[in-house]
Length: 194
Image 1 (cartoon, one colour):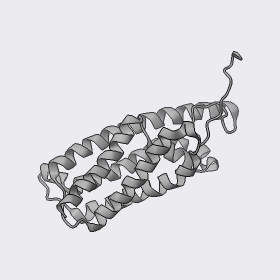
Image 2 (cartoon, rainbow, N blue to C red):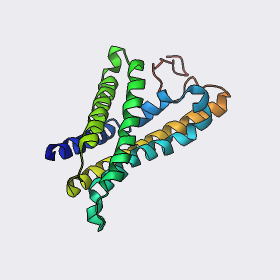
Image 3 (cartoon, rainbow, N blue to C red):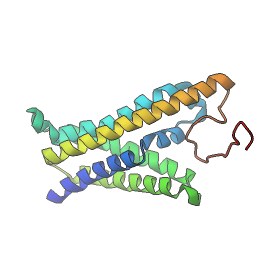
Image 4 (cartoon, helix red, strand yellow):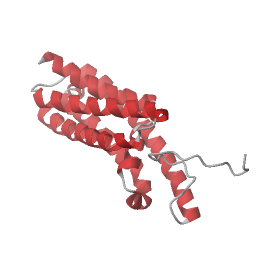
């Protein structure tokens, strides 16, 4: 059972690391999972949805063990519930998005989604089998990593949402040249024609 703690923390840490290395990974997932008809209406809300998603991981880590440093006893049951929600959303989202990235030039993003899916499934299994709290210091360090990744995701998603909104208002339809992460990127010629 002692090894499960570290496997679980490793799943959280791997996802935080992927997110930091890719400068905000969840905006890719959210831009594909949310249908275009809805995305046009709620594009401004996506950065906040992403932060909420990543704060589920932070809250889970807090209740699983890091709360001991704040003078509160860990609440593993609450931490497990929040962790299940976080990893379940991650597993469903990455499994949903994976078929969209199938060309060889999308290899890195596909690998990231495969790792996200595997670490989510592994995290669910570890949470299911884990009955005690995790190491508080390690959980606190992983919390910081996930918080940094949440900040990067928020900034990236905010920039994408702002750009999308500008193009949406300018064209009164679905933007063709907005900086939007789409399942299959399309090459658009520059305005000067070169």
